[in-house]
Image 1 (cartoon, helix red, strand yellow):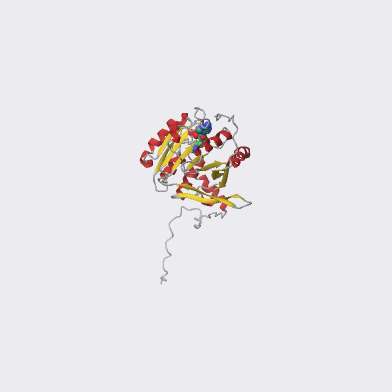
Image 2 (tube, protein in one colour):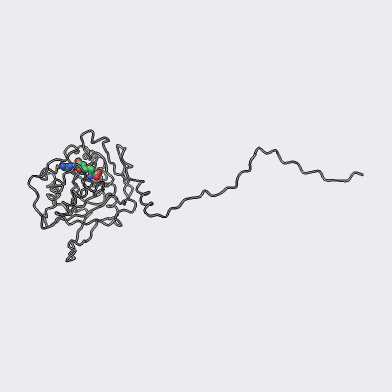
Length: 301
Ligand SMILES: C[S@@+](CC[C@H](N)C(=O)[O-])C[C@H]1O[C@@H](n2cnc3c(N)ncnc32)[C@H](O)[C@@H]1O
């Protein structure tokens, strides 16, 4: 009698896989806890990102977009450096956003006596600012967008059409608070500028570079910071360091004419803070040394 052996189990279907699929593993992530590296990484998100754009959109903290037109190849077209937007303008625009209502402080001007002076950079509707070498004018526009009631954006006559165009593009956000005027530092401030003063703040963004004669810039700043109407205007200057030679050329002269305070980088916008761009507050010294009569009279483009 045949024994009842159960049939063998069916064979598995033929496999097309010749290799076993490796078990899934997590992709390793590299975390670098290096604050210096992190700052550089953050700066790469914005530095120079505007360089090749005919129009750059500056997205304000409240979601508004400031439209900034540039003219590419401006130097070759005879417009100088002002037809392009510069990194320091982005940095100072973000600085404004961090200080609603304004920025104020105090700094020691005489270490022997510990004498300190107070300063204020008001960003309110009653404040009047003038910007020198405004170029595409982002810095001035950002100040107005943050609440400054009047900003006069000035530059060489050749840049006025670009400033006008940018003001027109942003009129709905700026609401008439920004006006333009031609001002060549080789001249006395024209009435188109002076009529809006006396000023609380003289804004100077990225105007310290090889082609500018330092005496010309100092002369222009002093002309706009004479105390008037009970106000002592302060200078707010954004400076990108490129060469020690240029820095010394300008700052040796600045220190003779102004008390200078470097704004601590903790007060900059944390994502728009880099080693080589400083913001300075400068207050004219009461004991002004005389300026040489024969001032160099032109910026060499
Ligand atoms: C490097 S650009 C900076 C432009 C703008 N402030 C910015 O940060 O994007 C320097 C500006 O200084 C202006 N400038 C140079 N020499 C000048 C002068 N003698 N009188 C008036 N403006 C001058 C240039 O026309 C230019 O707009």
